[in-house]
Image (tube, rainbow, N blue to C red):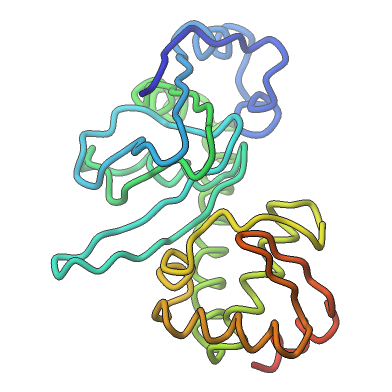
Length: 232
């Protein structure tokens, strides 16, 4: 269940990440209109097709973005860490309907900023608009490049790429961490079946490239995993 409350912005990191080109009055209007919500692990934050009137960014925790097709299949399109740029893609959605669902992987805190306010700044503040469009271009290119990169690999290469990327981007380079996703969800992210993901994990464990203890993973042979990620 989400808990809403007013959010303090004085030292908020989003000022430097997204709104550095706003003047004092414009940023004050962001602060006064922004609300904060808390979600428990597993809670749905946005449902695909839902009316979307806010820019929603992650302040703490971990969330997944996913799409459900008409045949029931699910594809995870992104895993977001705090202050990720990914939510900016919603700003120019002319239908005002969410094109994906969003759910908390861990207990998470999210902030909501009215989209009409951001669009207003884009229309009247050229520096803000240019910076915002540059960020959107960067995000779009990153999503396309990651999609092509991971789909160019075989099963072992995809799982190796996932584990290395997880350790680097979410767990700050640590070699020991807990998987935030189930085997099924990993398959939905890398475009493989649950059975294939389980098989790849089992092979890596037998080859002593990783250690598995429940949801905990330890990367034992990082160089080998990197080679599999590159050439797999």
